[in-house]
Image (cartoon, rainbow over all chains, first blue to last red; front, side, top):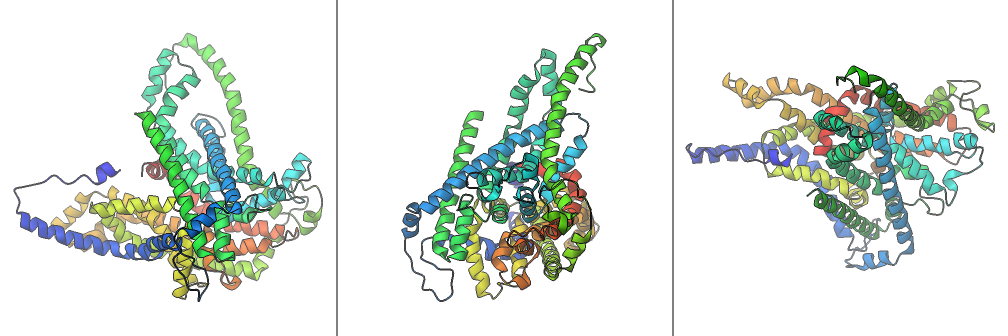
Length: 307
Length: 291
């Protein structure tokens, strides 16, 4: 995209440069005028707050009126790094983000491969694969609460158990991971399917002549061809998962005993229940750094391997 | 498999292999369908059960005495109806404003190639990576200073801001698809630049505008987190917030109306996805990955 979008128009040295420059200035003015209505809200409610938020991380700001805010340097960071609650939330967040992303990818790849075959009932699966994407996250959360409900839920009834899934210390996290996979799988499937359909047929025909097994075809043609799509969607999934909030908030509110308190839920509580705005902002900064580091490492390794 | 001509003698072996391969494939497909469908079926089943049946132990898949009373009960809940109305207002306002603001900007992005373009695209990516908490705390403070906390215009402003990057990106794809030659032809015919945009470009953009309107509407209708922070007074809450409050302490009796209301809250998105489903597979998402 960037390569085509930014290619400069070929220079035409013969024409009068002054006239061109004036026309160029007019075009620039026009462009700014057209962009302005979009730039104002983005600057006011998005870029501005982001920079402000990064600034807050280095203060003792409280989320209340009439509080004298002062600069405290890295105090919030040292507090954060010695906060046991943060570390357990961080650990849970990492387990959640990595396992949901990995399971989402594996499940979505399997489904995409199936949907790419000429199977009957493919249409049913195709429609179903889009439904979770279309549902409001809150409804997804409520629906799964009905599934996991200790008395009225279907899961206990099917398994013949009497487990309070979302309130069990060791089962709550796996239970919400399943919901995370269910929620995010469809989008990943659609993207991978689009990628699969973009693999040139000639490549398969060429190896078909050599009598390559389906497994070899998958390993040597499909996967390498899909690689850019896979890298893009798993990166996005990871970012979305680590920043997940609404779904888990509706399911468990971080309980039981903080067993499903993802970093964003922790930050939300710090900011809006205990009103430690500066501390919560530092938590946001720390998470942004972690996400950028993980993504950077991942993309760097992928680039190195393709070279 | 189709379309590749094979020598006739090879056919039987191919077919047998095919069947052997097909069985596990169908089993896998069935497993996926079950996994994807069962929570949905359960939601529907719960929505059709009477309160008496909800109280029984050993819930069953198929309601013993199916009823639509949960749906009418949900309509009888003042909170839910009011919240749905507010959600509708917020989503409509957000969608219209987003498109009005994005339309000129997307035209500029598509037609004038400049640094700003790259910055805008970069911002779309950056805004994905940064945790919301970094934005939402200062945003809350700004809205509080503007007296917009607990007001619907405040939430609309936030929704417009956060739908804009993707809406811009969607729309400029549609603008790009309109050949600049058409505009040039119009201006050769004596039309002013503005006129040529209005009479030539705008009609061709109609499908893109509809898609963007729908997308923005759904994003706002479904949105939970910003609403949670901006609207703290139950009297102004939107539907997702009210649904969550509606659950309250784990009372079994209200689960039926809750399921019914949840189903109804999903209808707008389902309509949207039914409309754009064909596009999803090809253009939209293929582009999303490249972008």
